[in-house]
Image (cartoon, rainbow, N blue to C red; front, side, top):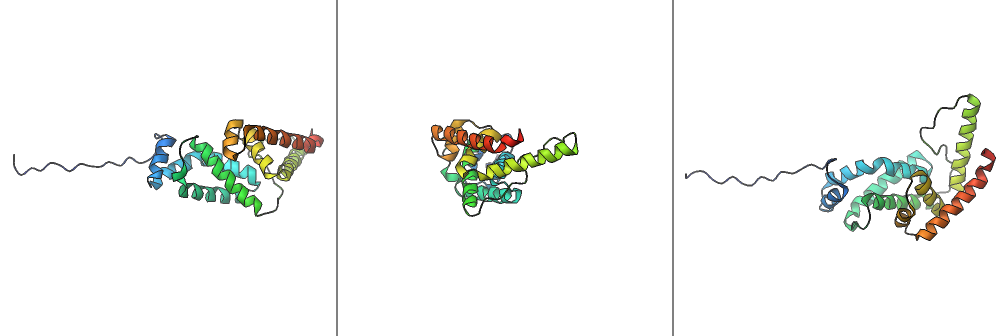
Length: 194
């Protein structure tokens, strides 16, 4: 029949969501899709904030570090080649941003290292636990940045030596040495709290 035109092809844009894997979202972000990058940021935000908080020792500074790291990641998303997991790449971006911020300030004591500590049975135990956590926070801040970051990534984030080496840019042997030195120094400082 004449008078009927072929319908124009319809482009259906699939919004990024939880059903898309990291690599797909990265490719879309590299093509300029801001919503894909936002989905990646939301997906990894809790772990990245936890890392920043533990490295920085201050929640407000951790928030600043994470926001700056996310901006860094967006600006450099085209540099992600997929040689490692996106989460590993983001850990490295956050770690680098934290290091840059730490270099600009003097070490400050940490008020609390762990979130959501269980309620102790008595006020005395509560005070002892608070003092112990404050001592650990101070001891962590007393470590060099390289030692603290490796220790936090291993002991608090549960990452393996290979992944920590990728994040920090150090060899696995160097990572093992840093973690050993950090454990030794923390054990010395925390001996009084056993």
